[in-house]
Image (cartoon, rainbow, N blue to C red; front, side, top):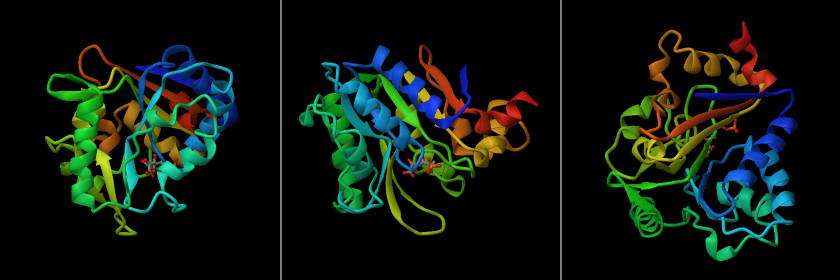
Length: 234
Ligand code: 6PG
Protein backbone atom coordinates (compact mmCIF):
# COMPACT_ATOMS: atom_id res chain seq x y z
CA UNK A 1 0.00 0.00 0.00
CA UNK A 2 1.46 3.30 -1.18
CA UNK A 3 0.53 6.30 1.00
CA UNK A 4 1.24 9.80 -0.33
CA UNK A 5 0.56 12.76 1.99
CA UNK A 6 0.67 16.42 0.96
CA UNK A 7 0.40 19.60 2.99
CA UNK A 8 -2.66 21.05 1.25
CA UNK A 9 -5.47 19.91 -1.05
CA UNK A 10 -3.87 22.00 -3.81
CA UNK A 11 -0.52 20.21 -3.47
CA UNK A 12 -2.44 16.92 -3.33
CA UNK A 13 -4.22 17.72 -6.61
CA UNK A 14 -0.98 18.83 -8.28
CA UNK A 15 0.92 15.68 -7.33
CA UNK A 16 -1.91 13.34 -8.22
CA UNK A 17 -2.24 15.06 -11.60
CA UNK A 18 1.51 14.59 -12.14
CA UNK A 19 1.20 10.89 -11.31
CA UNK A 20 -1.62 10.53 -13.86
CA UNK A 21 0.27 12.47 -16.54
CA UNK A 22 3.43 10.41 -15.97
CA UNK A 23 1.74 7.01 -16.13
CA UNK A 24 -1.67 7.12 -17.79
CA UNK A 25 -1.54 9.40 -20.86
CA UNK A 26 -2.82 6.63 -23.15
CA UNK A 27 -4.86 4.58 -20.72
CA UNK A 28 -8.34 3.74 -19.48
CA UNK A 29 -9.26 5.68 -16.35
CA UNK A 30 -12.41 5.59 -14.20
CA UNK A 31 -13.28 8.84 -12.42
CA UNK A 32 -15.30 9.41 -9.27
CA UNK A 33 -17.58 12.31 -8.48
CA UNK A 34 -18.26 14.36 -5.35
CA UNK A 35 -16.34 17.54 -4.51
CA UNK A 36 -12.80 16.22 -4.01
CA UNK A 37 -11.96 15.69 -7.71
CA UNK A 38 -12.70 19.34 -8.63
CA UNK A 39 -9.18 20.62 -7.89
CA UNK A 40 -7.67 17.58 -9.61
CA UNK A 41 -9.77 18.13 -12.74
CA UNK A 42 -8.74 21.79 -12.99
CA UNK A 43 -5.02 21.01 -12.63
CA UNK A 44 -5.16 17.98 -14.93
CA UNK A 45 -7.01 19.91 -17.64
CA UNK A 46 -4.28 22.58 -17.74
CA UNK A 47 -1.53 19.96 -17.93
CA UNK A 48 -3.31 17.98 -20.64
CA UNK A 49 -3.67 21.11 -22.77
CA UNK A 50 0.05 20.80 -23.46
CA UNK A 51 0.15 17.06 -24.07
CA UNK A 52 -0.97 14.76 -26.84
CA UNK A 53 -2.90 11.98 -25.16
CA UNK A 54 -5.17 9.08 -25.85
CA UNK A 55 -6.72 8.90 -22.39
CA UNK A 56 -10.12 7.22 -22.25
CA UNK A 57 -12.44 8.34 -19.49
CA UNK A 58 -15.05 6.25 -17.71
CA UNK A 59 -16.87 6.64 -14.42
CA UNK A 60 -16.83 4.73 -11.14
CA UNK A 61 -20.38 5.83 -10.50
CA UNK A 62 -23.04 8.26 -11.59
CA UNK A 63 -26.21 9.66 -10.16
CA UNK A 64 -29.39 8.82 -12.09
CA UNK A 65 -29.87 12.40 -13.28
CA UNK A 66 -29.52 14.08 -16.70
CA UNK A 67 -25.97 15.05 -17.79
CA UNK A 68 -26.80 18.74 -17.46
CA UNK A 69 -27.83 18.35 -13.79
CA UNK A 70 -25.58 19.93 -11.16
CA UNK A 71 -25.79 16.53 -9.43
CA UNK A 72 -24.13 14.79 -12.40
CA UNK A 73 -20.56 13.50 -11.94
CA UNK A 74 -20.18 13.72 -15.71
CA UNK A 75 -21.17 17.41 -15.67
CA UNK A 76 -18.40 18.23 -13.20
CA UNK A 77 -15.82 16.50 -15.41
CA UNK A 78 -17.30 18.10 -18.53
CA UNK A 79 -17.05 21.56 -16.95
CA UNK A 80 -13.58 21.34 -15.42
CA UNK A 81 -11.62 18.52 -17.09
CA UNK A 82 -12.95 18.09 -20.61
CA UNK A 83 -12.53 21.77 -21.37
CA UNK A 84 -9.00 20.66 -22.30
CA UNK A 85 -8.67 20.94 -26.07
CA UNK A 86 -6.44 17.86 -26.20
CA UNK A 87 -9.04 15.40 -24.94
CA UNK A 88 -10.71 13.44 -27.75
CA UNK A 89 -14.43 13.56 -27.07
CA UNK A 90 -14.82 10.10 -28.58
CA UNK A 91 -12.78 8.85 -25.60
CA UNK A 92 -15.43 9.85 -23.06
CA UNK A 93 -17.66 6.97 -21.98
CA UNK A 94 -20.14 8.44 -19.54
CA UNK A 95 -22.76 6.55 -17.57
CA UNK A 96 -26.07 7.84 -18.97
CA UNK A 97 -27.87 8.98 -15.83
CA UNK A 98 -30.88 10.00 -17.90
CA UNK A 99 -31.56 6.41 -18.97
CA UNK A 100 -33.82 3.93 -17.18
CA UNK A 101 -31.50 2.81 -14.34
CA UNK A 102 -31.60 -0.98 -14.74
CA UNK A 103 -31.25 -0.65 -18.54
CA UNK A 104 -28.26 1.67 -18.07
CA UNK A 105 -26.60 -0.83 -15.70
CA UNK A 106 -26.73 -3.32 -18.58
CA UNK A 107 -25.69 -0.83 -21.24
CA UNK A 108 -22.70 0.51 -19.28
CA UNK A 109 -21.51 -3.02 -18.45
CA UNK A 110 -21.58 -3.84 -22.20
CA UNK A 111 -19.64 -0.60 -22.91
CA UNK A 112 -16.96 -1.66 -20.43
CA UNK A 113 -16.72 -5.16 -21.87
CA UNK A 114 -16.53 -3.82 -25.43
CA UNK A 115 -13.76 -1.34 -24.68
CA UNK A 116 -11.61 -2.70 -21.85
CA UNK A 117 -9.40 -5.75 -21.65
CA UNK A 118 -11.11 -8.64 -19.90
CA UNK A 119 -8.91 -10.06 -17.12
CA UNK A 120 -10.20 -12.99 -15.04
CA UNK A 121 -13.64 -12.55 -16.63
CA UNK A 122 -13.97 -8.89 -15.57
CA UNK A 123 -13.18 -5.64 -17.40
CA UNK A 124 -9.81 -4.23 -16.29
CA UNK A 125 -9.16 -0.51 -15.85
CA UNK A 126 -5.61 0.80 -15.87
CA UNK A 127 -6.53 3.28 -13.14
CA UNK A 128 -9.57 3.79 -10.90
CA UNK A 129 -9.70 6.97 -8.81
CA UNK A 130 -11.97 6.61 -5.78
CA UNK A 131 -13.29 9.10 -3.28
CA UNK A 132 -14.18 8.26 0.30
CA UNK A 133 -17.21 9.36 2.24
CA UNK A 134 -16.91 10.10 5.96
CA UNK A 135 -19.23 7.09 6.45
CA UNK A 136 -16.74 4.88 4.63
CA UNK A 137 -18.67 4.64 1.39
CA UNK A 138 -16.86 4.65 -1.90
CA UNK A 139 -18.22 4.70 -5.43
CA UNK A 140 -21.96 4.71 -4.72
CA UNK A 141 -21.90 1.82 -2.30
CA UNK A 142 -22.96 2.81 1.19
CA UNK A 143 -22.47 0.70 4.32
CA UNK A 144 -26.13 -0.41 4.46
CA UNK A 145 -25.84 -1.83 0.93
CA UNK A 146 -22.46 -3.57 1.33
CA UNK A 147 -23.95 -6.77 -0.04
CA UNK A 148 -24.55 -5.00 -3.37
CA UNK A 149 -20.84 -4.21 -3.58
CA UNK A 150 -20.18 -7.95 -3.40
CA UNK A 151 -22.47 -8.50 -6.34
CA UNK A 152 -21.02 -10.73 -9.04
CA UNK A 153 -22.03 -8.29 -11.77
CA UNK A 154 -19.96 -5.48 -13.30
CA UNK A 155 -22.25 -2.66 -12.20
CA UNK A 156 -24.98 -2.29 -9.59
CA UNK A 157 -27.94 -0.03 -8.98
CA UNK A 158 -27.57 1.65 -5.57
CA UNK A 159 -29.68 4.03 -3.51
CA UNK A 160 -28.35 6.95 -1.48
CA UNK A 161 -29.33 6.29 2.18
CA UNK A 162 -30.72 9.73 2.95
CA UNK A 163 -31.73 11.30 -0.36
CA UNK A 164 -33.01 8.03 -1.86
CA UNK A 165 -31.31 9.07 -5.10
CA UNK A 166 -30.69 6.16 -7.46
CA UNK A 167 -27.08 5.71 -8.57
CA UNK A 168 -25.21 3.39 -10.88
CA UNK A 169 -21.91 2.11 -9.53
CA UNK A 170 -19.10 -0.22 -10.42
CA UNK A 171 -19.08 -3.31 -8.22
CA UNK A 172 -16.18 -4.34 -6.01
CA UNK A 173 -15.18 -7.00 -8.54
CA UNK A 174 -14.37 -4.52 -11.28
CA UNK A 175 -12.72 -1.98 -9.00
CA UNK A 176 -10.47 -4.64 -7.46
CA UNK A 177 -9.61 -5.87 -10.96
CA UNK A 178 -7.83 -2.60 -11.80
CA UNK A 179 -4.10 -2.27 -12.29
CA UNK A 180 -3.98 0.69 -9.92
CA UNK A 181 -6.62 1.91 -7.45
CA UNK A 182 -6.14 5.36 -5.96
CA UNK A 183 -8.08 6.77 -3.01
CA UNK A 184 -8.05 10.55 -3.40
CA UNK A 185 -9.10 11.95 -0.01
CA UNK A 186 -8.95 15.46 1.39
CA UNK A 187 -10.16 17.24 4.53
CA UNK A 188 -10.37 16.68 8.27
CA UNK A 189 -13.85 15.19 7.97
CA UNK A 190 -12.26 12.02 6.59
CA UNK A 191 -9.39 11.63 9.08
CA UNK A 192 -11.15 9.09 11.30
CA UNK A 193 -12.36 6.79 8.53
CA UNK A 194 -8.99 7.02 6.73
CA UNK A 195 -7.20 5.90 9.91
CA UNK A 196 -9.72 3.14 10.66
CA UNK A 197 -9.46 1.68 7.16
CA UNK A 198 -5.70 1.94 6.65
CA UNK A 199 -4.88 0.72 10.18
CA UNK A 200 -7.78 -1.79 10.30
CA UNK A 201 -9.10 -0.36 13.53
CA UNK A 202 -12.36 -1.40 15.23
CA UNK A 203 -15.26 -2.47 13.03
CA UNK A 204 -13.52 -1.20 9.87
CA UNK A 205 -14.97 -3.95 7.64
CA UNK A 206 -18.40 -2.31 7.85
CA UNK A 207 -17.00 0.28 5.46
CA UNK A 208 -17.34 -0.61 1.74
CA UNK A 209 -14.02 1.18 1.12
CA UNK A 210 -12.24 -1.37 3.35
CA UNK A 211 -13.19 -4.08 0.85
CA UNK A 212 -11.17 -2.43 -1.90
CA UNK A 213 -8.19 -4.77 -2.30
CA UNK A 214 -6.55 -5.04 -5.72
CA UNK A 215 -6.26 -8.52 -7.20
CA UNK A 216 -2.78 -10.01 -7.51
CA UNK A 217 -0.57 -7.73 -9.54
CA UNK A 218 -2.68 -4.69 -8.80
CA UNK A 219 -1.63 -1.68 -6.69
CA UNK A 220 -3.53 0.45 -4.19
CA UNK A 221 -2.38 3.99 -3.44
CA UNK A 222 -3.68 6.66 -1.10
CA UNK A 223 -3.31 10.31 -2.04
CA UNK A 224 -4.13 12.40 1.05
CA UNK A 225 -3.70 15.90 2.38
CA UNK A 226 -2.47 16.54 5.94
CA UNK A 227 -6.00 17.02 7.21
CA UNK A 228 -7.26 13.66 5.95
CA UNK A 229 -4.06 11.93 7.14
CA UNK A 230 -4.03 13.64 10.54
CA UNK A 231 -4.83 10.53 12.63
CA UNK A 232 -2.41 8.32 10.69
CA UNK A 233 0.57 9.98 12.26
CA UNK A 234 -0.76 9.70 15.84
C1 6PG B 1 -20.15 10.36 -5.77
C2 6PG B 1 -18.78 9.81 -5.56
C3 6PG B 1 -18.62 9.42 -4.12
C4 6PG B 1 -17.62 10.39 -3.56
C5 6PG B 1 -17.61 10.39 -2.05
C6 6PG B 1 -16.72 11.50 -1.51
O1 6PG B 1 -20.79 10.05 -6.77
O2 6PG B 1 -20.53 11.19 -4.91
O3 6PG B 1 -18.36 8.89 -6.42
O4 6PG B 1 -18.19 8.12 -3.88
O5 6PG B 1 -16.34 10.04 -4.06
O6 6PG B 1 -18.95 10.61 -1.63
O7 6PG B 1 -17.30 12.73 -1.88
P1 6PG B 1 -16.56 14.13 -1.58
O8 6PG B 1 -15.37 14.16 -2.49
O9 6PG B 1 -17.58 15.17 -1.96
O10 6PG B 1 -16.18 14.13 -0.12
